[in-house]
Image (tube, rainbow, N blue to C red; front, side, top):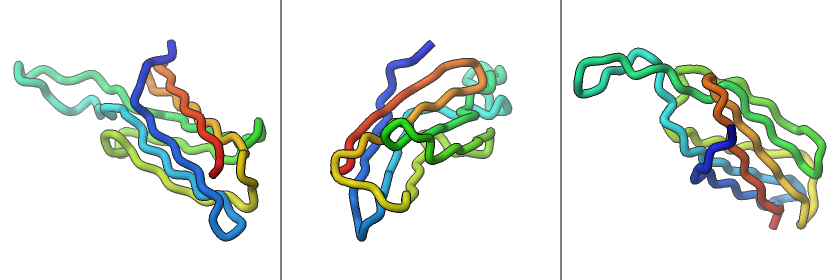
Length: 105
């Protein structure tokens, strides 16, 4: 199941490299927090993030419960051109998925 999220992704060519910035909208519950009724909130966290540039996988990130709510990632890819397509997909521990896509400017 793919969820509708407010994930944000930006990619910019800078000094002949592609700088990618990602902000994911996800609660990242550890499974140890409690709600107002003092009940445990079930674990829900992103486990896998993958990124492609023009259909070539360029990055894989493995996350766990220590990753913050609404995680922010920034990374640099060697090379690239204006107009390249950067695509991102994440999967969490309960099977929810999210995607985001942008072009390099």
